[in-house]
Length: 277
Image 1 (cartoon, one colour):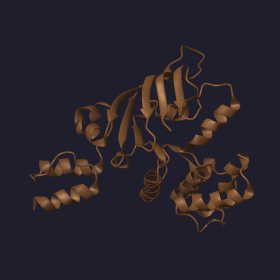
Image 2: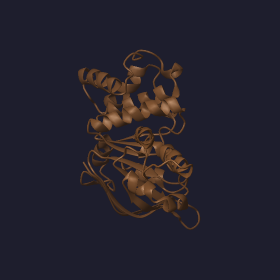
Image 3: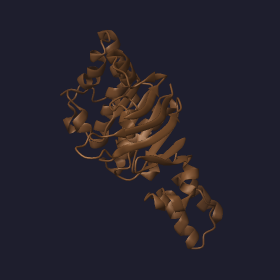
């Protein structure tokens, strides 16, 4: 179920001259892929995310989900698109409405008119997918930030989307919480769910299939993690950072250790350090 952008521009309404938040973007998100979107604050990342499931409609151009345009007045068609493309936002507390976890997971399917027996199956599936079956009957109030975000992901998974868009969903979490959520995201992708992850953390991109870099509303880089972070001049130009493993490798090379370039994950760095002895 590809998502395609065809010369998409989006301008937020203003009293003065509109300033495009997204400018003439054309791209395709392939079915089953893991795509990360990077860029400074105000680069257009979150707007791009909201255009993917019709929360925003292009000012110009067209966004299509599995061939269906988000620019439609047909509420049923737009509803179908939003069922296919689930959204998870930055603050998990803002996404929770129920006082019991299983009720939170059931909320989406109930609004879709799913039969009660199937809702029970979906709750179990979603909680198992994020590793949160134990607190099913508990209140989410005492959960950690990472656990709450996993519940937020589960509540979206219960609606059986084929694509999951996460808009800086790890931004408010501590390192442990980020690791927990990233493990869930990678596992969901291995199961065939398309992942679009908007993030500020370079380490979260290293196992992605593709990295898109945005600046001032435009796509300025698009490639594999190796291609993106291999261009250190462009990385600095767009005010990004290297993944920590690549940064450490760079410093170790400066100190005289013979290491290859393009090391983007901790495991590869450890292996290369052992080989260099």
